[in-house]
Image (cartoon, rainbow, N blue to C red; front, side):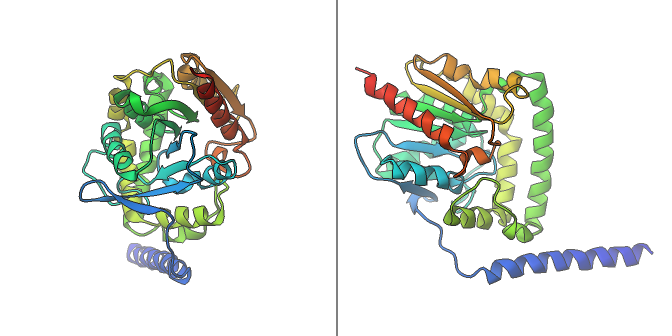
Length: 313
């Protein structure tokens, strides 16, 4: 009986993997957008959109499991307003080369410094961070304050969130998911996810890039590693303060009452800013806040930061 069940499960697994490989193969050739920037023997994919102008460039950092494609809708909308933006894939994520471990906030900030220096984009920048990227950008901003004009934080973590009791339970659950996704990606079980729905609400190119990244075992393993070292990244980021002179917009999503405890900590950068702005988008979720349908609040946050900068003597 056990042997029969094992054979059946093996056959089902082979069918799953085969089906996934099949749908990816049938999708045809695919070319990611953007360009590849050498940061010293390895390359990171950079996607910039919008015209160059006197306005600051919006530099974007994706959250856990994320990549440049997460911002495709927002980049499209910013470009339509004449605002330039740049998003990228962190090392080992999406279409970028892997980088040395650990992939904590210190490593992300070090790579980002090299990428910006080699990109040809001129700062200071308005940095936009989604989710876990909040602590990466906190780390970078504290180390390179001369390159920071302002911040737009989207459902973003802060290092102080790690100190809350409920954060430990949440992190434990996320790390369990990360371990499972890394195993699934290594076994090619994620291939069938190629045609799963888009939870953000991205334009077609962004959808395709997201799907191709999510069927990658390397992407899954790197994302899992980033999540596992999240706590040490929080310690690193907490050691560097944010300058209260920077204008800060904090945008959250979903039921504000339900998330009140989290949002108290999320809003700390905005409350400590000389020109803070806060908005909650109740119709959006954590991911869909970045999409074509629910990103109006994000654009208002950008407008606030740019307006505050224009008033600065």
